[in-house]
Length: 236
Image 1 (spheres, one colour):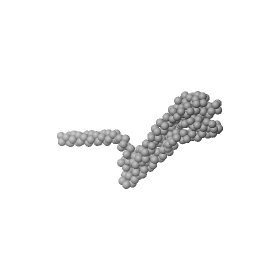
Image 2 (cartoon, one colour):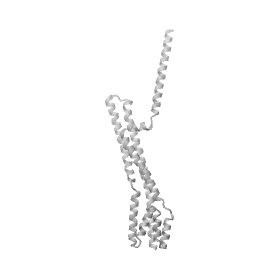
Image 3 (cartoon, one colour):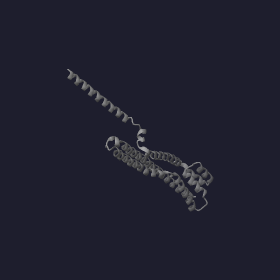
Image 4 (cartoon, one colour):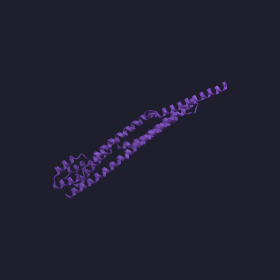
């Protein structure tokens, strides 16, 4: 009878220990699942600070340049038709006023050409081209920075990877043990910084090429309009 009671007691103890272990494992899993984005970012260490700054600069440039290029591209299709009609009538003052009412690179190019009327066509064309170059430089302002960030961000992520590896080997050398506790911190640094660097690099890379395409399209329209303006002068 005593042996039976001992067996029952032992079984109950084992079951209790098993349940406690399972509960602890579930609690650990829940705690791991509750890891917030901020906690994950902090695991990356100090290398996340320059990556965060690069991401902020990239997003700012993309939004600012996008709005600027969109405003520059807003030019009614009737603009050049209006310029042609006024110049055919000889109303240069009206053509200048029409340009002033359209604050766009194209309008500033045409206005410069109108102000040079009376000079040889070659000089007028050179003036229009010079204004066009200035306007293009304004449109492309800071876009090249995105290209630089696209190259730097993944490299910073790689630096974080190296730091993570150093942490792992340092933990192993100081403890003399090769366990999950020794390598987890370094692995966090490696993976978080690598992922962050790639994400920032992708954002900057996509933004750079997207804005460059927008600028190229606008330049094509400006060149066509400049050619049309010179044709108007030659016809008159």
